[in-house]
Image (cartoon, rainbow, N blue to C red; front, side, top):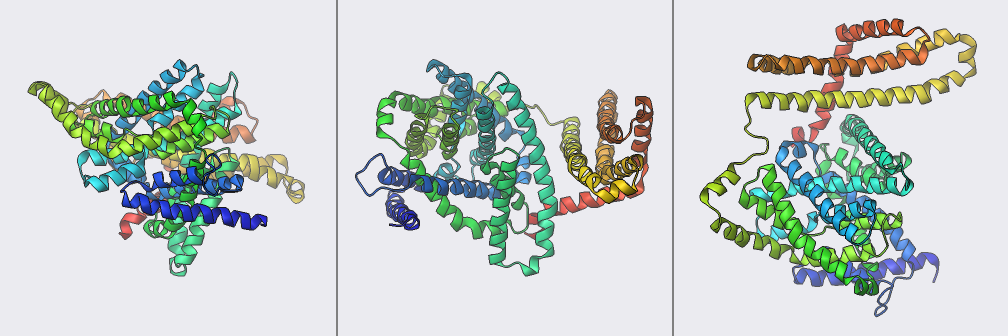
Length: 578
């Protein structure tokens, strides 16, 4: 059989077997993911009772595409607006729960004699719950609209984001196994935040505008090709700057989710996502080794017990700390008590990067399968557990728990500060990232390229060339500098309310204003130092003058306002067209 037909034969075996087994799992009312894992175990190289896949390497390559489409689909279902509209409760629940389970996993790793990094990643895998399994359980139990279900779904989204970050960190750790690994991880996180903001802002500004301008020329076929092309293109961009394919696919999916065409794109790509996801999960099942499971059955049992009991407790306490009432906290905790599919994606990356021992992969898969089967029963168990606790608790204690809120009451002052932080701080962060990225492109790529052109050096003396480069730099980033220091009428009104409420607030407002002017001064100073050799005090004076020019310039303000309106129009495109 030729090489090409061998791949076709392997895919025929995988998909035919998956079709038959998943029908059986449908009849048994079990998640399809488990069916794919069973198929992988049956046709994989470790059982040899049935026809087996011949070329594992090709299947693994296809499974990598499966991860890309899974992350792309997750991004399409993701919404930054919805994420930030749920308030602080879900964020606190998610992060306290993740930190708690990382601590539990780290303790287990230390008991087994693992290193710090391996133990932390084990805890990270244990903190991941399964979005697909929980959604299926909610549908089957008809509890999707309950308050704890909404809280759980947002926590799952945050867990998925943390999982993407963990995959980025695994690559960083693999590349820097030395004494400076901690610094490398910190720099990797900073780099990740920088590129996420840059990609999201640029993507939101460009992609919806393109789709809107050419809407009448784009049919379903064009849209499918454009979407997949953008997905693969972003994967290449992410890889080129040192991040994983999964991150690139998730980012472009989340950008497209904010467009008016998001639901259409999700519908068009659903079949492709399901196909490659099936191949991925089958390839995961191929890695299940009975010998390894027999050798490490104690570890599997430990992970299952930790997930069902300790994770339920940690997640319940996390929700309670965040301010959920006792009943919702217990139901949320018991619902999150399983190991999700992201855990074995992380395990796969960690093993391939030699960050964790190879046996952790089948161990995590086995633990995930067991806890997946228990999920619907554990959700049902939460109600009698809550009833038992309530019966043993005094009414006063229960009332205190239900009325408790981590952030206290929502006074007008706190609301004002939150509004300022949400709008003002976010704008400063975004415009600072854009200014930094623009100056980096200008200083390291555009200006050096122009300087190498022979007719430029012949015509322009160095001093004049530097002056023109500085002026061009100022002109390009000036709208963003205006955005950093500008206060909207709404912000000014919030400032006035805060000062009326407490005159001491004026100190914080002044400090925050000085911080923003300092950021603008940094960019202006960077441009001047790059192109001029004057003494420092002269540069400082020039920088102050340029800042004042930006602040007072009506043209720059108009340019900034146009860019801001365009961005908000694109960001709210889905809402405006629904």
